[in-house]
Length: 356
View 1 (cartoon, rainbow, N blue to C red):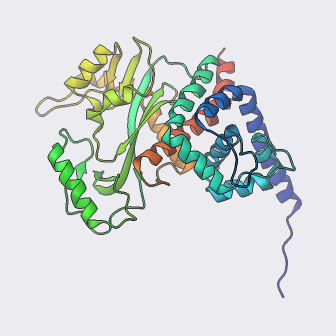
View 2: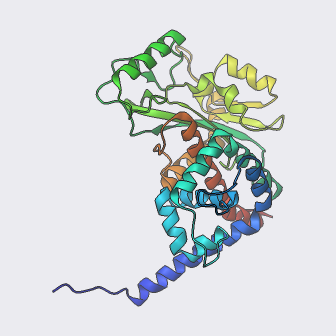
View 3: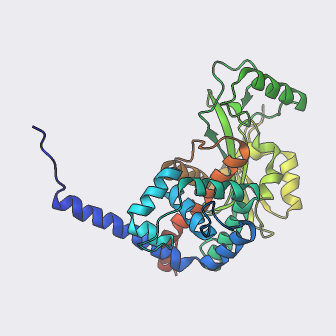
């Protein structure tokens, strides 16, 4: 005979406590962010019109908030629809009444596709960050750059027979070699393989996928995002990364030794940014004591971007690709950056109050 287990009083209390914590966080977001600005921005690019059944389509802000919930709680399109219909706090955050149901998963998918095609997520990151700057949550006293590999499960089967780029290599493969690698990849793979990804050898292990390049403030809040194939070397595309955010002149710029090059030194001078890239030892030329001290001092700031990558990985499973193709992966990276910045806001506000 099967004995049915009923929830204990402790289980019920814990469930209420969890739901209360969520409601408090959602209320904080509604207090902090002027959603009208975000809604107006979305509506410039997202045409609602009529649904296939003739009913008015769902509001763009509702669908964007669904995307935030999806990222914060690691939900699929199907799961976020169910959770909003089951959770009062979720539906309230999205602006739905008890009588209203959430948009179905296909509506959310079409919204994401439309927003991706028009590069709206980048504009949303800029708009939300401006509001965080206004509240002095983002303060551009210094900026940090780094990159992290995102693995995709849609990789070629078998051992690669074409060149694999070493992470942090001094020189990039020639353009002709890159073209041949892509052709070889397309020959060997099935339609299910993400051909926008690339192989890279990192810490002695082969990985296939993408790189997300983050530009953050000194607290690790994301200012700009660039998405590339995994085999793109950071040393070669710093100018593209800098173009993802507006930076004030004269602020320190922190990066690890992988960004150290004459080209990047000149670039930072042109941008009028203070060079705080870690010094790199060369053959028969070890670091001086002064350079070691410089690296140690800069490392106390630079590590915070690694904390950003680690938190996104733990909180949002951000080290795994959920979509196919570089364009859609860029959307994933931008949504994770948006969700991360907002998620950290309450703690930063409390810390600022303590320090004031």
